Image (tube, rainbow, N blue to C red; front, side, top):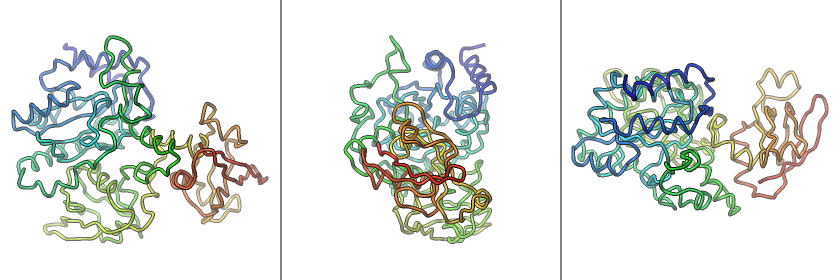
Length: 444
């Protein structure tokens, strides 16, 4: 049994034996990283942790380039990761048509090229050898369920990318919106909040894991760079790569962009999308996966219209998706690892959840009122600020910074980050049992 096969069996055992909490890590993080390298650095298919070598090979062979970014110590996405590495997987014939690169740390990523959902533990970008991005793949279904081994959606993304590659460079203009936008820093280690703490290379001769920049640290560092300068954090860093559900759109996980349903009254429903529709293009961009939809929403305006090309039955339709002002703030960021840092900045380390209508009725609160229950109160460092200010688990916040209208945790965090800077104080009213208490929440 070869080393790669042993590694995959080990990964499967880890997945089966641990909780599905997406942020959980394996017990021996250092060992996991070194085992990954030992299994794959000489593998015939995978170029290991050398992006430029992958681009060179793609140019030499004329194949498209597939770059998997994988946080090895993280349990999340271990199921699909193991499937992608299997030599006899159903996607193996498709992988053979790509130059495949595996990247396990973000230290030296070219941030102008690698723009994706930094909170995922397994992401894929598809390139032409000249650096043109064909598309992106990343699954929150796999992120939430480490045991999920399904590869149907990934297979669809591979197939769609190969079609785009066959049409290149004739389709170059349609790919313009998929390219990264200019960034202030070339690599993550140049961001002030990471500079001096990490180098471009991993420390294989010492402790590897502490020398690794994790993808989520990029978003953390960028947000902190604004916060340290007492500037509002941009909306696309607070609510990054919005899920299609943000606009009331549910897409099938095993397809590129097939509509399963739309939420009544939502932008998706108002655009005329129907169950069974295939979204072929959005904002003029051809799609390879649901992650492409999230990327387009990530770069979308704060309000405006996006053109859609939709296949319905045997015909096609042109539809317009209208994004109302404030649409982005409805994105659910509660499960994102990047939200932890923002909770420290805005809510003093509290995890908040909106009361259901039934729970509101029991407490005599209206359906349109602010009612955020304190689900958890942090205990250490900046995440202990709310506890020190007197907030307790199961408190219900009914007024915060003068706001009394119903919003979720993510929207409230965004408001506080954009309207307040560190060292300011925000007044809050909470219900503790039948008692109403006035508290002050420090911004950090």
